[in-house]
Length: 381
Ligand SMILES: *Cc1c(COP(=O)(O)O)cnc(C)c1O
Image: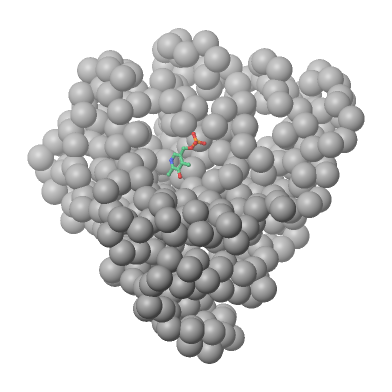
């Protein structure tokens, strides 16, 4: 049986998106392809509410992060790196391998950077060249309030670079409104597409910086990607994954038809209802402060030493979730799929079943509180 994916990437891909990828290939220097890339580019700009070009290129999310580091950082740059989990650590390591001098700010897992953390770090390091943030820390299920954090930075302050791999397409993310200079994401999470496409958006300031010297990366030379995208017939410098781009275009059309605002509200409603179901069952959530809980992924605490067994029990029921990425015993459940209440019952009910199969004492009375939450649209914070 096809497992139901509730992993925080890859995610369950709508049938129309998969089917789009099965269409016959066209050449990437053909009129059909130019039109496809133009459509993708316009929809990505609409989703992100940006005026600057957005690059879609072959890579996973990590490749998009590497592209930011290669094009916007120089060896010796001082970089303030906020990390509240595994992905914050990864972005830091990528910047470090680019030769940046890292000024680390470690936030306890399950929490996020706050405006006062940002203010304090900048006071200590006023000449920092860049600040790194993780929008949605997928390893703990915590969402950083980027808008609040960046509003404390001066206009001519450090460049702001953001890992938006697990937030784009699921959570509001508006880099130009939030004065973000470099944003990295990819296809296989909030954008409901198979893995393989990296997405990068730079601000005007970011593009100026990238254009100020030759890119040290041949493949991820962002100004080169931009020049090809801005030709009269938009294209990529190197062979793109054409059929994946068919799928991405279809997914973006789908999300645009739903309406991006509506999509963000649906994801949030699903997460809040799932949180209610878990707590009503007797399971606790890893992120304690409600307002920090991610709409995209929920980390559910399980008894010490039981995460692997629970994950296996869920897999036997046909449901795939992720374990934690650190020492904490947890299961991570994603809410990207647009399946609504029936799908929510599938994962919450399966979690209950798996817990009982593993001998956990769980309350069966989670359905009524979950339904009440769902009915409201989203639980009050
Ligand atoms: C998934 C994820 C990544 C890594 O993405 P890959 O596509 O596996 O390279 C990076 N950052 C965050 C926050 C993620 O959730």
